[in-house]
Image (cartoon, rainbow over all chains, first blue to last red; front, top):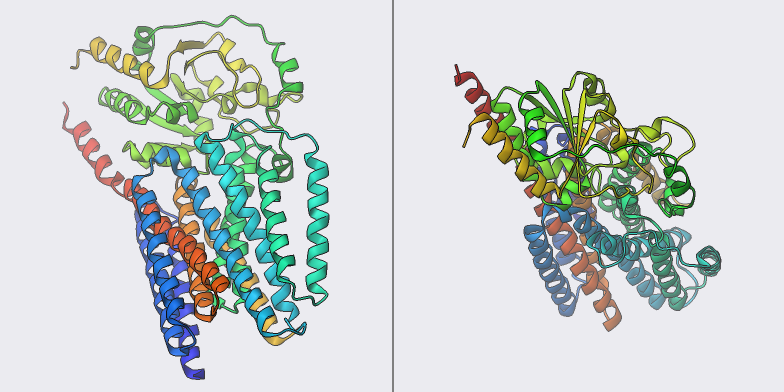
Length: 475
Length: 108
């Protein structure tokens, strides 16, 4: 028995190694797919080892096998269907949903284990290591479950993406936190009380909802990363509870990745994680007052003018924002870029770290349209190139191009931006003069160098592409 | 505090450090697939779901194990599949580039 368990533990270690090496391979696009495959192989090995262990122990009942198989098959089927059918624009929702179920499963593991132990030992004998990690697992897992569902709902549009400020939320949070502390204290004092643990789970679920509701749509990249880190931590805690090294290692890896991405995203918005979670960005009070200070003339231009500028440029930088993805215009932009490249125009894409609704989302959307990843430039790479660009074509991006960010005293102050205003000429494709999430006027639009082309991203790009074709005589 | 807990905490902390080290090298271009891959890795909780199924002996235990298995199965299979789908988009890039490069060079 001992030797068998040792073998299983070693197999788990091998699986964990696959996860680490798999993630390591993801640092370059050409090897990334091998990394994912390796990681999946590790997962398969871990699952097989677990099944072998369960069969070897022989404690499982027939119903247990049935539940395990049935649950696994149903879940896999749903997961497979979602993964195959999801549109790339909806990736953030899906990742959020997987965070939710991962966190939920981790919480359930702790609850089931706790109930089992409490059932066996009627005297208070659950070891502190198990009860502490169980409570942590349940709290983090449940917050992730409900928080991710709310986040996915906001991204999908089931729940308004504006920050929803519930009056008295702060008081409610305080009360819930106190209730959590009381429940935790009660369990740690040695009471093996199932209802208390369930109560903790319910309170945590409510807290997850209250935590995500007040966060606005533009902050979603941070929220999703944070919830990803939470799920990882919950899984690691589940590993402590059921004493599984595999779960601890894998959970810690995910916790680390989520934390790094959360930090990167928050930095890219020049805001602290606490500030984002506290919510209220774009609720508007201070923002609208500053915005009214800008009163410049806006120059509106048409598709033909845009086409002339683009066709005779030497260097064009395309600045895609979420508006591009929302209009499903990735493929049209690629067509326009190809057309320009055939004329010898140098085309590159400036990707702001928070473009899209999750870290790196815009890159995936453009990759789907078969834009070569070598043309996708990060903010640090592209900013020095703007002064050399003849035309900067801004499509559906707003706050991340606002030069006001360089000045203190407004809603976007200090946020790292793309230096679009340094280009020789700027074209903005936008449906209206509406505000971005920060709720302030974009000074770029009133810049004398800027031409505004008012259109839906997809319609506008089609018109421009057609105009370029007519202009240069390509059909 | 027993030895096994100390060992587990050690493993946890070291894994965190490994994670930070490995992941900080991933370029921004791949952040979404990275997050999705990490997402599938936390699907390893399916191991936990199976283990609680193996010790369950009443209706409550079975129900919890079943829901946990559904959740984890969805997480792990969906996660890997969608990551694979995304990464394939990044893989066909070099071919597209070389084709365009040839086009460019082919013109007088």
